[in-house]
Length: 633
Figure 1 (cartoon, rainbow, N blue to C red):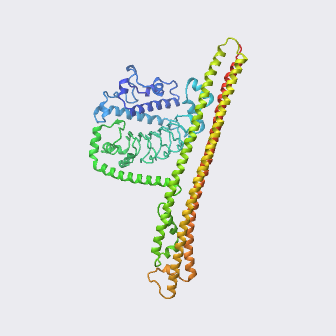
Figure 2: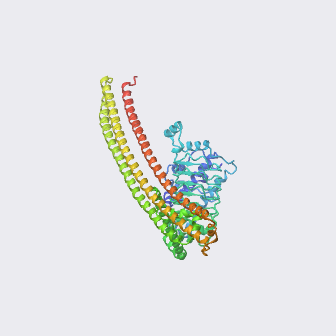
Figure 3: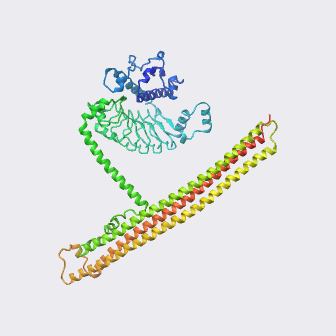
């Protein structure tokens, strides 16, 4: 029967110090997974000292007498090379090969262990599996017993190991909302899914599965370490949300396009990358390409990248990288411009005057006005439209500028109100803390005297303590009632002020919108006059030869042309009315929601404070009652 000692690999203190962080992490993962596999198969019932050290975060190096166990089939494997300079430099010296072989065999062993489970039926990530995993990986000794009695809430779990479980689908993890580390390696998972709620995840291991496409990671914005080693991935993409990514393991996959690695330039925090075992790793220029295109990388395939190699790579690929940097700079400039434009639009929306700083409203009036566009071909209408548009846009800009000024006034009013509320609450809390401190000083002394008294506590002493508690309760409740009244008055004053500001804004906007209607009415009259004159000329046989046929079709008779001009006028008025109604509705809704939220927040605060006072007083009462009724032997 295979034992853990048959598979384990040990290091001396000196060898352990020569390993970098990525190498140590790999070693730890392989040893823990090896033990887990043997344990699940019933081959390792007693936990080895090495595993205990790794689980506790201790350094796992051993004394010389424990060394060197070797991997099966590699009894002559040399120890880790010392000194480590050749590994750290990232050079190709011969004495680094033994370590590369060793790390490769660790990976191979990891894969071999997963194959032990191939005959097991696929399992479902159900509640039973999750509860068992949480229970086994929870606290030990007394804390563990207490946790088993009371139960461990999934939302309180920070680390979860589900390796070697033959899991096919990721599911039922939505309750682990505060999870930081998730281990799902050595399963048969085919798709990355079910991780949407794990927004706090920092470390994710999906190595040794059957994943073909990178997906389902959009919500993992805090992820720093991602392992997809030994899957079936052929393309690196869909990682855009992982802005904090530092370590990415994609070794032993099917990535064959070296230009795909340019995608990783967007991850400014990426420092460690593993791609060994992919088709691209066989390319002659593989390492130099990565050094040049990913200049911030520190480790590649478990080796530190030397500065000299980076310089050589930069010189070799300078032309192409310079061109790429130029394109990235242009793209970044466009992105920043778009972001600034979106931010500006959001600010305008907050002031309820979005799209009123240009000709948007005027243009929208004619966007669906078929008849109006036809009539613009009439003689004299072009000049009329230009004058109309200039005056109309001027009024819209006036509304826009006035809206921004009013938004600033509302913001100042809200900031002043919030500051007043916070100051009142803070002052009240200080007074409450002072009263509690005074009470606790006196109460602690009274309780100490009662406990130290040889005779039973007298009724007078108990009554005095009880009176102190009652007085504290009354004092705290009085403070809270005073604060509630003060805040209610402040809220009422703010409500009046904000309602007045909103009312004034609406009144002035409606006045300006009325000017837009007056302009439209004037334009309508002029346009109708021109249209009638044109009709009369046509009747007299004096047609304008330059008019398009669809325009001529309007001049059949007076009713037809009057209806066409009227339809255009109605569309314009409707657009103006809709924009005014939208503005008024939005700002009224904002005002109502703001005031309602302020009232709800105050009710919630008041109830919470009263509950805190009652809980504190109840605790003091129970403490006193325990002295009134001491246990009698």
